[in-house]
Length: 186
Image (cartoon, rainbow, N blue to C red; front, side, top):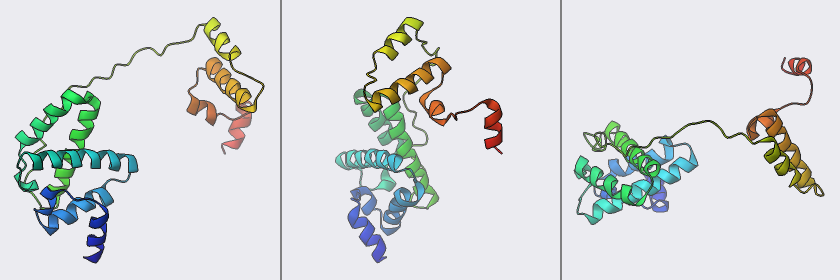
């Protein structure tokens, strides 16, 4: 239990979690420490959860067990007025995952965020714009080739323009003929 106290002191715990007891506190800390491996996701989820818990506290919700779908829906509606649809969907995902984790840990009986719908967010895909030959030439000619960085940039951009490759594919290419590449792949 001393380790839990040490971890908890380094991580600010929301009042709603603390009032729910030791099991809720432990499960809450495990959600961020054991369940989310990506540090960027952990940081984004912790911001979303902290904002939601602070909002709930400000509106008189006494404990995490008292959170209802109406609380989650109201908070999401408020978020849509200030943030993009993609950000709001990510924040709702953070809240849903946290409550799922608390349900499976038997801290709360049901997930109050499960029935809440997020805003509509449609990503449009279309044709990738292609540079006209004159535009490609102007881009390549505009790069300063008197420095090693300029030479590198010109080579990479030229490779990408003439091979229609993205930067990741261009960096992964090997020098040689297709026959030579088959020997190195063995």
